[in-house]
Each structure stands twice: as C-alpha cells, then as structure tokens.
Image 1 (spheres, rainbow, N blue to C red):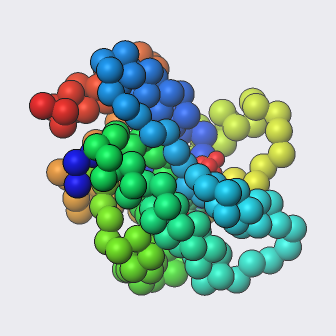
Image 2 (image 1 turned 180 degrees about the horizontal axis):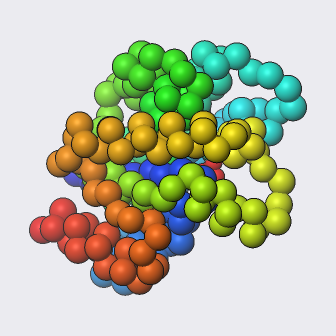
Image 3 (image 1 turned 180 degrees about the vertical axis):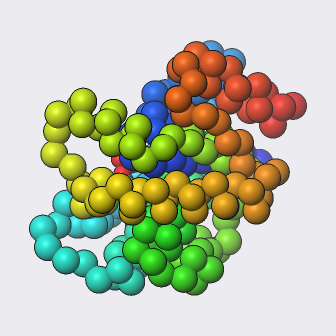
Length: 206
Ligand code: TMP
C-alpha cells in the first residue's frame, strides 16, 4: 500500500497521547497528510463499541471482550484505515492488535496466539509498518493516573498485577518482532522520547 501505518502501544498512563500529538504535529509541519485515529472508537460504530466495552457496568466474559475489541478493529480498518493507506496517507493510530494480545491475552489470560489470529482475521492481516511501545512500570502508570483525578474505565480499574502482565506481554511482543517495534522508556523526558520517535519515523519516510 502507498501509505504508512504507525501504531502506538503501551499501558494506560504511559504517555501515548502526548507523544502521538507531537508526532502528528511534526509530520504535518513536514507537509505530510496524516490521519490520526484510535482503537477502540475510531468510527461511529467504534464509539458505541468503545462505550460498551470500556464503560459497561458489570461482567463481560473475556472472550466476549476480545470479540468486541476485534469487531471495533475490523470495522475501523475496513472503513477508515485501509482507504487512507490506499490514498497514500500516514495513519497514526493509538492502539492496535498488540493491545488485544497484551490486555485480553496476558491480562485476561486468553491464548495470545488465538487473540492475535482473531484480529488478523478481522483486519485481513493488516500489520503496522512501525509500532512505538512506550514502556512504563505499572506502578508509575498507576501513580500518573491517580494524579488525573477521574473515573477509571473497566480495564484501567484492574489491579496492578493485571497491568504488570500487560507490560510483560508488550515487551515479549517487541522482542519477538524487533524490526516492527521501537521500544522507548516512557519515563524519559517528553522531548527526548519525541526525538527518538521522529528519528525512527524519518528513516521510514526515507
Ligand atoms: P485508551 O483509548 O484510553 O487507551 O483506552 C483503551 C482501553 O482499552 C485501555 O485500557 C486498553 C484497552 N484495550 C484492550 O483491552 N484491548 C484492545 O484491543 C484495545 C485496543 C484496548
């Protein structure tokens, strides 16, 4: 495809939003056409699914949760991301299938290969050109969120050991695919992280 697909991953409170906004501003200042989007919730249907899966009170079976995220992803890729990539745009996306492998696989303890395969089926096997992983210990992320003084969603509210499993899963994914992943220490200064990211993205742009 003509475009470039960049995804950001990391635990809740890892600083993705800050880095994504900086990267998008940098790309646009260089004259690139950027589509900024996220999962879950990058489409109208996705907004409804996001509300369900993140804010529904009460239990959702782990496999049902995995299917809801996968449904959001499938519709998002089909209706928004693939068309953008076919036009030659740069898609910068907050979370993609690695989130499902980490949260539903390691967090909810489902088979990670099955969770990944579900998303690959849903997206007709679309993989990112680059995935930036902002790595932060679960305890640090939790402290950052506590400082925000707002209600937690269903996933954020999980105990620290859930988020530690998520982090370990992300690191294992990055180790298994070192060419796709850029792992950055999310505790480094914001500007330093940004520089590391744009250096790698510059290489990708050629
Ligand atoms: P965020 O949009 O604020 O990052 O929140 C999304 C939440 O949903 C976050 O807690 C991670 C979780 N999540 C999953 O559990 N599985 C997924 O596939 C995705 C995309 C997100």
